[in-house]
Image (cartoon, rainbow, N blue to C red; front, top):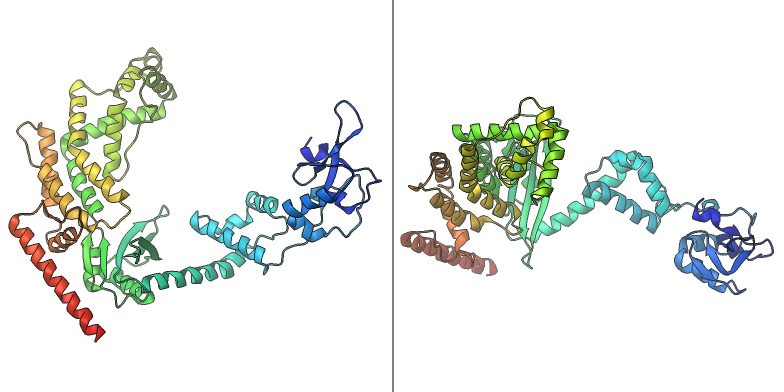
Length: 483
């Protein structure tokens, strides 16, 4: 029995219309009403009752204004024995009313922010939530959302973004080509700028399907159209992309300064390291172990027990995917859980149910430890670039120099470590040759790196001279504009 059903209607002698929304509970063990408190049929709250309905009316007006405005306490009660909140006849909110407009706006923001399908407005569960929160509101149809509400919201947001971009002194773009799970190709262009309050603003300007091949010419045309649509023609644009030749060509054809994405550069260099034969062999062996625990419930349960027994974190084993750092995470997690893995594989329960059990040798474990140590600087650098909430251009040059220097061979390096370092140093060494002056200038104006410790004395002097020339040019240009 629900709370509402346990509330008994007020006796027929109680004529005030407010009793439509209140009743009494019976005294425990009897049929008499407990009239010291009236119980709200809307929210089941108890309200002190002493023969006067003023406080009951106040309760409805303050806490259930939608009911109060609808009823106004002018109508006589119907059948006093049956009325509950479910039976209150709500008048529907006009679609143009302030409250209905706000709810529709919230529904749109929910769809957009959470990337929900437009069909969510047709889902029974969603409609039930809305009905519970505001029974008078009518959820718009999917067609209305698609044809009217969403385009209107887009134009409103676009106007705000245009205003934000127009006030920016300079704008940087990022351009990313990607493929959906349905193997459909898209290109996304995002704009970034700093406000007068030194806050970073990022706006996705376009996400367009690319039905043509991802040639430099096609991407350049998309960039040019985007710049024109968003009024960025007068901005001194820089575009950051991945390291593919077609993106470099697109930036050049669009007349933009091009910077290679450092996180992508780290990924490429690390992928080279992971393709070393000894590392490939090691990754394959670890994958076999993690795959075994994923498919065997017995082994998985044993692993959990051994983790608890050995006081290890109750982490699941990881199987790597496309990005190099997932391979790093896989072997790092394997090392963390290696005692529990070994104990689980040696348990009688696992050996009884499995004919063939694959394990790593002691020399394999030693090699895994060496690989993790060799790749950790690349992992740390990737985290720095991906987690930074402020512009990262000034970080690239010092971080690049530190990684290249750290990848120099040492006499104590094991053969696999030596091969990893060589692969990383060779790949990173050929990156940012043409962009280094831009990167050095960015580091010069960053208080963290302004001393340029990663450069030679001659390179530092040259960079500061170039910065001074740039400042003089900008000042002269501003003076000419003000005349």
